[in-house]
Length: 127
Image (cartoon, rainbow, N blue to C red):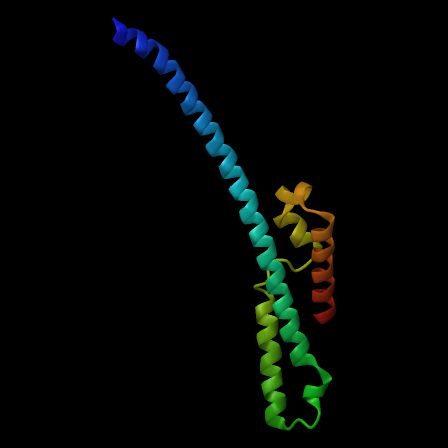
């Protein structure tokens, strides 16, 4: 008889703990999704920065002084390569940013928004 009493007491508590664990798991999964979205955003900003640095280097005026025909062909290939790589960049403008990161827009800080704007502006200037 003591066994059935223990069972009557423990089963509801176990069910309650299972519900709490499931709720906690859902909260963790949501936090993980948000963190992965921020990681995606920072990786996209880093890719933009790298592309802009490379493009600015290749387009610098110093590089074009005293160029022979072979250098010009090489520079054209580099520019073609840069243009093809620009298609791989996730954030190409404000619209891309707003579409891809709409689900975290309410928790993005003003500082990060300014950083995104700076990267987008730099990208547009280089293109």
